[in-house]
Length: 493
Image 1 (cartoon, rainbow, N blue to C red):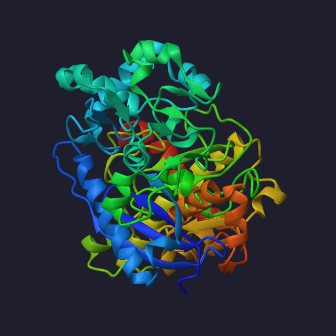
Image 2 (image 1 turned 30 degrees about the vertical axis):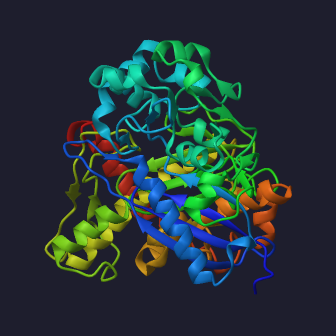
């Protein structure tokens, strides 16, 4: 077993770090080490100390190696995939000046609106960056920092994303990749570079930013002696540029130029996310027009209310999340935290269509249906942005890859299957972000395309496969009718 060649793929998320030890040839997951993060803040604030991420990375790597039973000398490369959009400001010694502003810190919503207006509206932004500023985008957070913590902004010797910070600690090189950079609001997907005009608008010196590597699999350096000692790994192993978490999940699924293009993925988590790798650059304001880690694009849509909202409804009804039935005449839009797609930031939940014979199980089923229809409508927008007609038979027949915690639940799977009419693939790989990062690390260490490598590993195609079924258009039309009629007067649209 000690003769194996392995790589480490790191998933540094909002709540924890996972370090997957992956066989570089077969893609077999040998072990996963885990370590928690700490998130602080209230009233919209969400912050973390980046030094906690670094310590968690060391703890997770140590735990993963111990579980694998392999010696450290077996490791040939490492890559980090991180939570997108967070703002890290560093002093001249590479230490954080303050806690990082996380993607889900909403204090920068006014700054996002102001930036959108200053450039001339949503279309002006999507033409350059592919995305319209919202509170999560790093540019909005930089504007907030300049207004609310000007000393930190003035003292910054470096501005990084979370994954950039960790990569720099590993290799001693300030580097990022097109995928994660495309979520900043100052990287132009139209040109594949930082946008000088946007940097001027933001008052951000380009000298503070990391260099953008050609891809997330580019070898940007080698593990430094200091990092090797901290992590218990061999000095000199390959360090890849790494990428953002959504981009890494796409690589892990084999989506990209050397794999599947324009094949949709639906992630059922706290939020609902749909994305696809495409050669078409999105300029739809309803989407985030990200770049992918391999040189293609990754248009993406995100709804705020998904599994967490439905679980809350189950709790209110005193039901287990699987104790559900189709909603009947009831329509429940579980927009408990406002909604991002569609853009209804002040919305709350809406229930209509109650009858004497409506059961609690049907109400829970209606919550599933409301959340599923919302994210599946975003899927249709995504497919159109890829140049496809969602109703065309050949497009409707493309399997929908279902990932995230909700994909483990019968009710979620059956609701999506019923309302989409699409065949489903439920990939067997459980740590797709870490697996994608491992493919980036393996490519940095040995060459080759990470998507092609991940495709040979097969995580995106193995697992359960469910045939499509006749689409429940009656429920679809009932839910969309309520959503369209209620949006402005009742949902705050």
